[in-house]
Image (cartoon, rainbow, N blue to C red; front, side):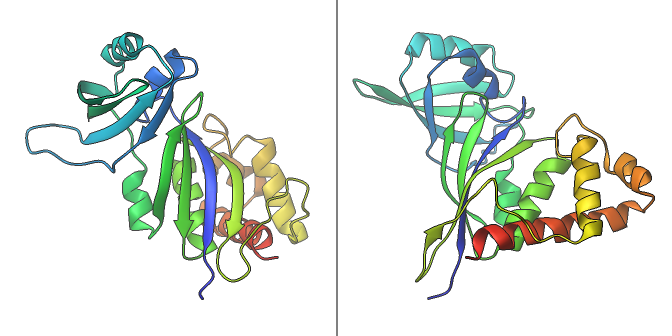
Length: 222
């Protein structure tokens, strides 16, 4: 059986779908029940969400003030939850097209208190690194929660204290990028980090991709 990988992560950005609503309501539970669906008569896509653990009038009031939402309908009602069809606005930011383009598969999407928790399946670790890089370039905060491998020796091996085997130069690049806030949405740009290190942006990009590949290899390979 071929070995593959699953990553759990939190992503956050003010323009991700329903983020203003999530940040307005405490303890609301949302689960995405579909991928974005295009409609010929809508500027933005449509998504279906399961909503629970909140006052539904309060949730709907928050939707009215959410700049990522154009309109909504209740499609199903139960005693403890509702299903909503949300018409998202053109202002909403998505990462799911990039996920599909990278050959990653969405296993689940649910909200956190500031954004969204994703479980993604990947055929190899490099594609997860590519997704991280995409989020960084889009100003989307990306926080790794859990990593594990699948296959005959499936295991969870995430460890914050693990020592990643980087070269001295890679450590210098990683430390400089971290010190300058490159990994934060509002941190230094690639141009600023490259200038600090005295290298070109393309060389910096190569260093960072190799560093991320080693991080994923170290975390996934036990």
